[in-house]
Picture 1 (cartoon, chains in turn cyan, brown):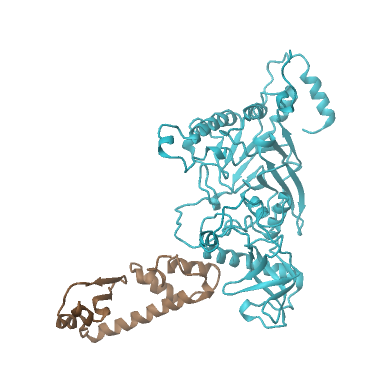
Picture 2: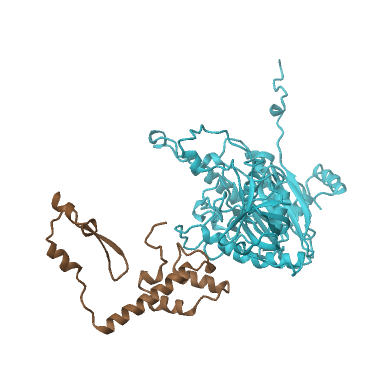
Length: 467
Length: 123
C-alpha cells in the first residue's frame, strides 16, 4: 500500500488538488490487540552481590537439553556424549559446553593497570579480533582448546555449542562438526483481515548538538495524520503502534562526571532539557497512537541489560495518557497476534565488535541460530547477575525480530529449519538517517520512510543571491 | 615486650567460634593476662551426655551441608543461599537430597546452615 508506484502518482495528484469540501471526513486509527511479554526482563528486587558464574551455569543447563536434541538429530545417537572430564584420546564423541573466545586484544583491566607494560592510551578500535584468537570449550568443571573445523573469527563467547570430534594427543579437541540449539517453535501467524502496520524508529538523540528537530517534527506530523492529503491520512490511520527503540536522548545529555564543581554548580543538567523536549515530542505522539518507549544505551536508565523502562515521572505530560507505555529493553510483545522481539541494538553492536561479523542482519540471524539474544553478556556486554534464570534464551521464535540503532536499514526474510519464518530488521538511527521503518503485520513486508532534509547550504550551493 | 613474646600468638589473638556461627577475633594485644587466667578460659566444661550427642548430630548435619555445597553437579554455590541452590537443582532435575532441605528449613534462622560454606569471605 505504501510503496505502490501507481498509488504514488495518484497521491501526487491528490496533493496538488484543491482542499476537500467534505468536512465530515473522520478517520479513525485502527487498534489491534496487544499483549506484552516483557515480564521476564523486569528486575524485581535486584541483588548485585552475586557472581556471574550462576548465569553461565544456568545458561548451560537450560540450553544443553536443546543442543543435545539438535546434536542427536544431526549425528544420530550412536556417537556417545561425553563430559570434558571423561574424554579419552582418539575416541569420537560429542561434547556440549560454553564457547569462550580468547582474544589478545580484548580490553583487559589487568593489563591496563599492570605497571610492567606501561601502556599508553590506545585509539579506540572498531573490532578487537586478531588472527591469534583461540576458541575454548568450557563445561561445568573443565575447559579444553578447540582446533579444527570451526571458524574462530565469527564465533563469540557465551554460545552453547555441541562439538563432535576427538581429543588429540596434545590435549586439544579436534572439531569435525558442530551444532547449536534448535530454533524453538513459532506460534502460527494469525491471518489478519485488513492491513495493519507498526512503525519502528530509533536513535532520536534528542537534546544533542545535531539539529534534527525539523525531520523529527515531520515524522510526528506524518504519524499523527496531520501531513499529506486524505489518501496519506487514510493510510497512516492503519498504523496501529509506534515503537521508539532506544537512544531517544542523545549521548551528550549524559552528565559528564569529569566536570568540576564550579562549572556545574549553577548550570542545569543537559539531560533535563533533553527529557523535557522528549516529553513534548511524546505528548504529540501519544495523543494519537499507542507508543512503546524502549530504553537505549544513552538513555537515563540502568546501563546493564535488561534495561528497565524509563521512569514515568520523567514524562509528566505524556504519562497521563494510557497510550504511553514504557517498556524494557529487550522488548517482546504480541501485536495483533504477531510476536515481536527486539532490542535497542547493544547486543548486535557488541557481537560485531568482538567477532568478524560486520553485517547486523547476519548477526541477527546468527543469534537466532545460537538460540540466545545476547551471548556476549556478561563477558563484554554488561548484564544483571541472574542466578536462577537466563531471560535472554530464546524460548519461542518471533515473527519479527529487530535490532535498533544500526547504521542503516536492512531487512531479510529468514527461514528456520522447521519452517519458521522470521522477518529480520535493522532500524537505522533517526538522527543520522531521518528514516523510520513501517512494517505490514499482514504480509510481513517492510519499507523505510525517509524524512531527510536537504538544505541548499548542506549541498554546498551558495545562498547569496546578489554577489 | 619480653613477657608478650613468651606467649604464643594464638593466645594473643584468639579466634573463637560463637554458637551463631560468626567467627570473631578476640584481640588481646597489649593486655597482660596471667597464665592461670588464660588456662581457665581455655578449659572446656564437661557437657552432660545428651548435649554431646546433640553436638555430634549437628556436626554431621553441617558436614552433610558442606558436601552439598562442594558437589559441582548442583552448580556454583557462592553468593546464593543453600535453599536457593537446592531449589535451583530441583528445578533442573538433579535430584538434590531431601535431607539437606530438611536440615536447612529446620535451622532457617541460623546463618551457619542457610548460607554457603564461604559466606563469611566477601566475594
